[in-house]
Image 1: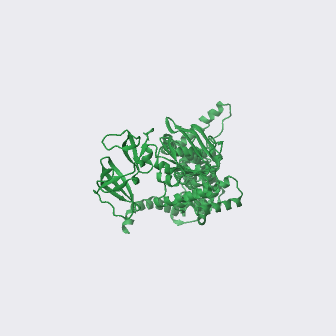
Image 2 (image 1 turned 90 degrees about the vertical axis):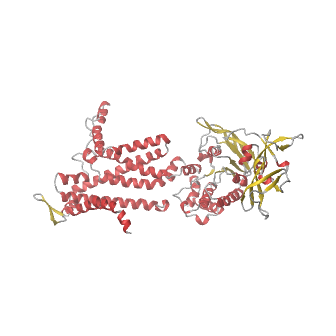
Image 3 (image 1 turned 180 degrees about the vertical axis):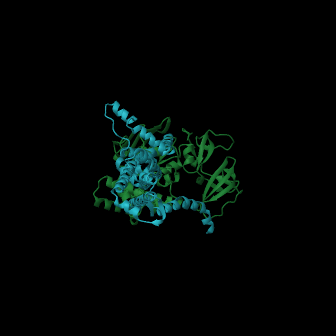
Length: 281
Length: 342
């Protein structure tokens, strides 16, 4: 018994040191009193930050915006990623590996670099607006809008949707599709009744990963949303580094974590419950 | 005219000829097997009939109707796959009902048809289970039921038994034949297992390197294989050099060197007699016991000869025992040279 614990010690130290401890400290910090003159008062406790968070319409707006942007990004990733994964799984040998690598390469480039890339494309004088003007249109404001944030987030998150879906597609028996065809099903019926239900576990993991990452994303809303279009993570950053109100920042971070957890767990339960019996998950 | 007809059916993959000008006529209610080693084009032929593989040349006629380029869905054939290809996210009942739902059959009729076919394959008590909860043989039955319930004109079986263990395979062989006879459905089965093909088919089509080399009833195929390849592939055979004698009957040549003929002699057609008597002398190399029979490998001046003797209760021969071999000359079969290389 002691040997088992001993062997898991390095992982345990890592887990406790890098996750549990900082989270615990953040939680503690969120209950500390803050004073603009002296800063954090480590030995005085209050619920004031939570109260001001829940009573301020500004924060509701930020949380709501973060939620709908993340949900939309997740939806778009499903709509684009599932067919993409399906096409990928049907490709021949040389092309499949080439396209898989193409899908994965964006992960090798820093999110910050990719966000700047998008800001070059979408800026007031960026490539997209140059094309619009060239075609005789009027320049459109793209950067610092939800549109810019969503398109960049979808770009960044897509591999996290494609990979789990692709993995579950690998387990599919291709002759099951042939069987359905021979029984009189159309190609669309095969997709809807045979392929999709079987890749639901992959879609579920994909949506969980994408939603979780999008809701806590910082670099993209920070760089493409600008000063006006804030999301929760950028507000946390502001509280810590502009307002220097660490306890408030910690409070928002804790609430984001809890809300995120609540949404993901209920989504997981909902989808899994529906497919539990038939998929044996 | 035959019920299912293939006219010069061909399939090319790039420069490779998978199936070459295959002709076949299957009568209504007949059970025909496509037999051949892997890569001989038998599965490709089946897939062309099912509509999963495009035809490069030739025609497929079903009951006089040209279905060469029809979509799989509109052919309405019943297909049983090697992997069974059951829908893992549906219960047995839903798997079987799928084809009927696609045909927009009324719900009450679906229920009664599914019930009937599940009784036919003896799976009625398992209707609400999922495929992963079933054994290999039971999955096989579900696949059969799913193909049969749509009352297809032809049932196509692609290596239906190769994923089952030996005991179950024999049981399912009987089961498939029983169901086929009960329903009276025209059936085409692809297999690489000669015993399987011989035991349950009305006729066997031997394929080799994309071509049909012999079509015959199982007994005829076994007794009169046309080529060296077929005599070797279907059952066991001793291949002996031979010549025609003055009367024009084939005889085994006892001198060394190749004869002008290749003769085939089935192992069970050889009698083991006392040493010194018979047509040929030899020594037992080794013996194998199969319960109902013994298989001996015997070293002779004509090389190694395999003899099968039924287990009649007499004591087996030991290794090294000297024996005589005898056979009826009329049981020798003259083989044609192989026109195709496998």
